[in-house]
Image 1 (tube, protein in one colour):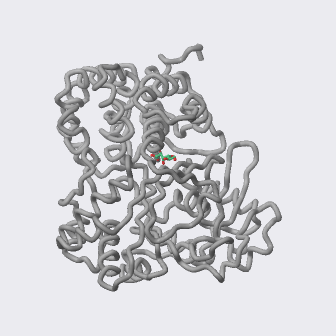
Image 2 (cartoon, protein in one colour):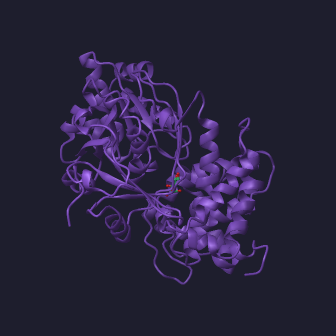
Image 3 (cartoon, helix red, strand yellow):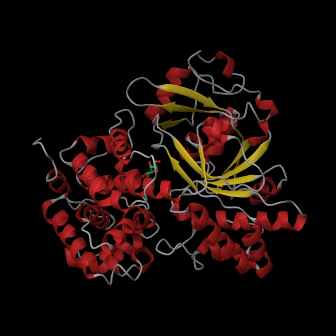
Length: 492
Ligand code: CS2
C-alpha cells in the first residue's frame, strides 16, 4: 500500500480535504512542545487553515519523550489525516502544517536551535497536566521534581518543557532576539498564568536576572482548548486507509465540535487564527473555568464511575442507566452556580451539547484514557468546584461521587478485586497509602494526607469529609453501576 506523502496528495479522492497552499513555501513560526493527538487535531488544524494567507506560521513539532510520532510522520513528509466522526458520515482532512518533527531526548540541541531561531515567534504546549512539573494543589513549581532538578543542573540539555522554555528564552535574550510568546494549550485553570509561574520561578532559580527578564518581557496568554480526541486505534487506521486509498500510520480521530478561546496577548505577532474559527478575548478565565468544570469534571466523573461499572467507553457509560441524569444534575445544580456569568452565553445549551458530545457513537473514547493522571486532574476538575460549594454552604453530593470513584479507582483494585492499570505520577504513592484500607474511613484518611492534591483546607473541613465519606460508602457498598442507576428518572 502506498504511504501518505506529498506526492500521494494529488491522487487522494476528491472528498478528502488537503493543503490548499504550497507546502514548499512554509516557514517555521511556531515550535510546538508535545506532539500528541490533541495538538494534531486541534491547534494544527486551526493553523492549517491560515497558512494559505501566511506561510510564515508553519509548525515544528517536538515530542518530549518517545520517537514514535516522528518515526511515523517523517516518511509521510509530516502529513497526517484528521478524521472527524459523529456517526453521520466521516470527514477526512490531510494536514500539512507540521513541517518537521523532533524528538527532544535524541537531540535537545536541535530543539533549542528551533526555539531560538528568530523566525520562531510562538512556542505552544500540550504537555498534559503533569508536564508542568507543578504541585497541582497550589500551581507552584515542584522544585524537587526529578526533571526540574536535572534541568537546573544541565540547562543546555533539558528534559522538561519548563527547562526547554527557559534555556531557549535565555539564549534569545543573550543574542538580542526578542522572546517568543509561550502559549499553553493544556487543560489547566489559567494555563497561561500557571506556565508563567513555573517558568519564571525556574528562570529565577537559574539566576535573578533571568527571572526578572522572563517576568518583564515574556507573554503567556491563557487559552481554553476543546475537542474530544480519543487515542487512535488500529481500526481507526484501517478506516482512514479505506477512505484515502493510501496508508497513514498516524491519523487522529476527533469530534466535529472544536473550540479555541485565546487571550490576545502576543508580543511577537500571531497567526490570524480567528479566520479559522478561534475566538480572541481579553480574559479567558471564565471560559476555561466553564470548560474545565463542566466538560472535564463530567468526563472524569464518567470515567471513574464508568470504568468501575465495567464500561469501556464514554458512549457505553452514557448508554447505561443513570449516568446521563447524574451528569446533567451535577452540571446544572452543582457546577453551574459556581461559574462566572458570561453575558449572552447560553449555559443550558452548552450543557445539553456536552451530553450529546459524550454520546457520540463513532468515537470510542476509553474511560481508562480519561482516568489517567487523576491526581493531576481532580484538583481543577472537581475540587475547585467543591471548594466554591463549601464556601457557599451548598451540597455537592454528585461531585463527591466522582471524587469517591477516583479514590476507589486509583487504589488499583476494581470492584471485583481485579487489578486496574492505573497511570498516574502518584500511582505508587496512592497504592501504598491505601493498601489494606478499603473502607470509607480508611480511604478517606489515606487520601486526605496528600496535600499536593487536597491542600490543607479540604482535609480540615468537616462538611468535606462528611460528604466524601458518604460518597465512598455508597461506591464501596453499592458499586458504581448501582450508584449511577439510582439517578435514572426512567427504569432501564
Ligand atoms: C479528557 C480531555 O482525557 C481527558 O482527561 O477529559 O482530554 C477531553 O477530552 C478534552 O479536554 C476535550 O476538550
